[in-house]
Length: 199
Image 1 (cartoon, helix red, strand yellow):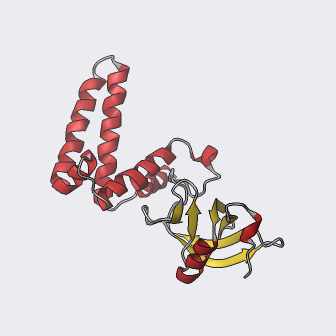
Image 2 (cartoon, helix red, strand yellow):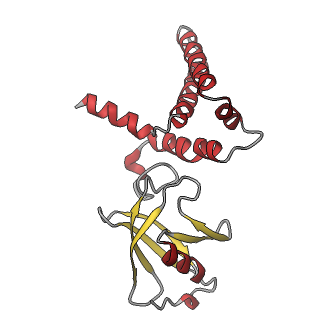
Image 3 (cartoon, helix red, strand yellow):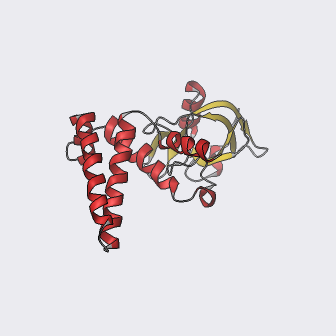
């Protein structure tokens, strides 16, 4: 495969990633020669991140890798199509695809919060992170915080201050996501249970 990286001043070519099974377009990124070589060698999609200015393997933080099935070059040799098997949601928001935001609603942010932010604090603890400290204390402390936030929400529900009520609801939801992550359960799995009950 001879890719013409010289067409672009920065030596990058666009890469369209498509789900090998559903044919959905999952995302678009950029590769240089080194990123393509690494992708071919390891079978996992690696881009050149323009914001980070380095090679970036999709899923290096979330573990939602894109396993390569096939790499196809276009007729001008300056664009790639990669058919891949996604190991979880592709978009950083938690959506399956970066092109489906309008249909996913606000739940995508909750997926992002759990799978990107909270999971990162668990897998890569940061000394000054409240969430990392909570994970370190274990399930008893996490469960206790969920209980405390639930009680505070109930108390605020009896008053008429909507802003305080929403704040306590957000605190409860955040700690609930931490508890799910501690148990290695995705929010999607809970949604699936609700959907089953709704049918």
